[in-house]
Amino acid sequence: MSLARALLGCAVAVTPLAGQADAKSPPRYGALVYSDLCYDPPNDDMGGTRITLLRFGSGDRIVYENTEGAVSWPAFAADAKVDAKTAALSFEVKTSEETLTFNGTFDDHVLTGTLGGRSQPLRLRRVVDLGQPVPKCKF
Image (cartoon, rainbow, N blue to C red):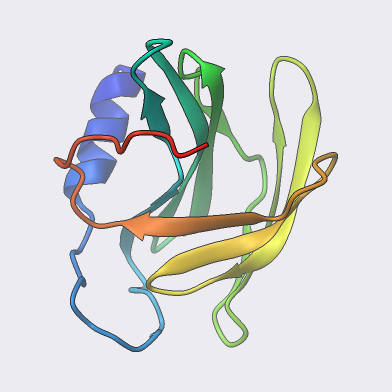
């Protein structure tokens, strides 16, 4: 099975829960996509980070993507730790350049935390409509 087909299959499994105003626990199963990816038309580039939490009965998996230009190949976290009671999330992912450690929390609307080696904390909103265009970057 190709990587693109696997990611597409996960994207289709996203359960849309938009329109619910309060932060509630995310579903136990499915794919949750958190992203701040944006498009910069003058430079024809993409920027931002996307973290996909894949929740299976056998455990949780993370797909990490980051870009400054073309979207990088996804990196899969070796060990995702999710605490359902506190909504804590941690993982370590190896990219072609470095090993990154993430520690944070998530809910049905947002993922927040720190990514080792980065000065700014991450705050990624959950994407529930995967068919919507990528927003333009705001600098």
